[in-house]
Image (cartoon, rainbow, N blue to C red; front, side):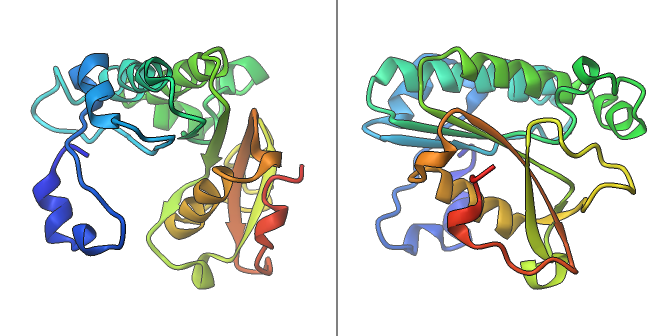
Length: 211
């Protein structure tokens, strides 16, 4: 994480087995190898945050090259057995005829963020690591009891349209799916898209990746 002090203030250091280390994907592969240490799994949920430091905080530096460097660091250690990458719906929009999709155009206007996320996905697919990509819909701070049960689909299923089975999804649900991917054999080498719907009952954990 970039800000260890912030994590400490949130009480994360008090959780059993947790060790907080500084890790910034914009600082290069060598620094990330050091931060990774003996980790045997990586869950990447990074995303650029707009700031006045545009040279460092931009989609290309964080969601593109930064994530690529994290993947390369995981490869270099030789110890990472699973890599889970959280990106977004519509990262592959141009390739599936959705370049004019209003949702893609709006989100991608932020420095080509969806294109950068897709660049990282492609790099992960060819990395030699055992990987899973999770593409959630709009992230909600509400609990799953509000956003509804998870609805999963293979790559390029959901387009952020009113006709989709769902759009927003709880951050808690995304986290649950990411953790499940670390040990579920069905998650290997798979892109999963994730939304939720209040009318949808909870999805059993062992069904997350049975697509």
